[in-house]
Length: 510
Image 1 (cartoon, rainbow, N blue to C red):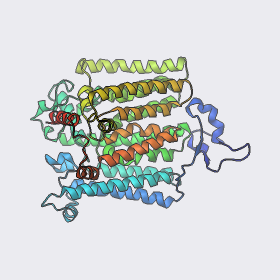
Image 2 (image 1 turned 60 degrees about the vertical axis):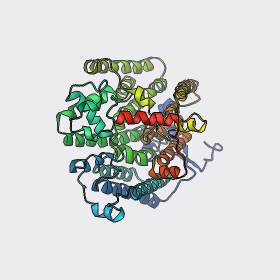
Image 3 (image 1 turned 90 degrees about the vertical axis):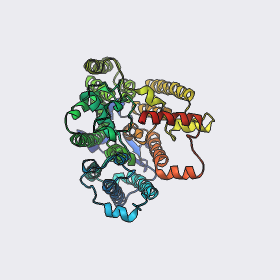
Image 4 (image 1 turned 90 degrees about the horizontal axis):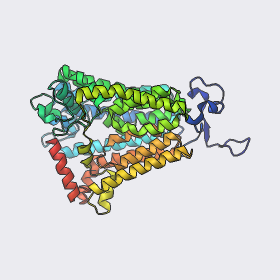
């Protein structure tokens, strides 16, 4: 990216060799060693880059303040911020800060009338504030040291660890399926949580009539938690989830270094995304179980350990099938011939013991994708599209068309990579975008599937798309949006399609 042989574009940044382990001299000098994995080490500065470290520091402090307020408020007393609290809110669920902010909550919210409107407005304001702070942090990312970023991420995650699961009941669903199989000897892929109504976990679960949609390996990993008390299992699962979330961030850092990218921007892009903070870490969702082996597979590929990369990717697929989307692109990233075959062999060899254990424990049953794929969220892109074109939402026919289009997009992306018109990381990222768009049931945390690929990719457009998707999900899932649209008489679920989907959701939850 030079204007001529002697002048450098002032907008360009050539990353120093310090970001590549073992590098020496100018980063451009090691480009041949990185080969196809690093199409370019010369990156253009974002046009909105901020050069003040004070802005970044204040933005991170604002995010920490917002997270702290949410943890204190959600730990104080039962509120809709913690869906499980409607069934009971003992100290082991609320966490060590239980009741600390009760006086503050009473002062701000009319507890006599249980003023959910004030609570929802407050949560929406905090969510918007965190999104703005996130944008400022990214704009000033290069003014921060990696040490400062690492400390900030760890502190944010530890604060969220102290609180109850925000907005989600999923952590109890995981324990419900584990206890269903390990304690009550019922196959969680053929039986439902309603089959353990007398188990203490039942009252905190949400999908009572949905057979498990989670991967067999994840379910097996949770089985030992059924052998300890429910409070202990809950805190073990929370602890492991947060540790894995930190390991995931560390792997993003490592992959960025291996590719010669600036790891500061990559880490912040993923780690302090407001959806990652509030729904993944604060909600103790299980995506880190999948993302750690997925990013480890990418790192192993970049280290040219092809067979092990294939085996580790199979672990990610066994935890959540979504990650199978990475397989063709990792295969294309490996050199053609023997190395590519080695990766495929690793993937197949790892699948054999995993399949044997799965069949031994669960038989030939599979995760329940069929029912889950028929559930619709009001603001999934597919449902909005169906609503706008007069189909009433994500109608079954539109879902089938979306599946065909997704396959076509994947095939097109593979062809572009084969013809060397698109790098493999960007191709995997764009296919992940297509996957999210094709789903009728979309939750905010689905963006985490895309974030690491966008963070370490060479594509600025992919990063912009990931940010746009983040903003879209923040706006469509925050309470103020629902209140405003209801007041305006707008309801994407007010159709025969929406009513059928809502009826199915009630049946699965009842």
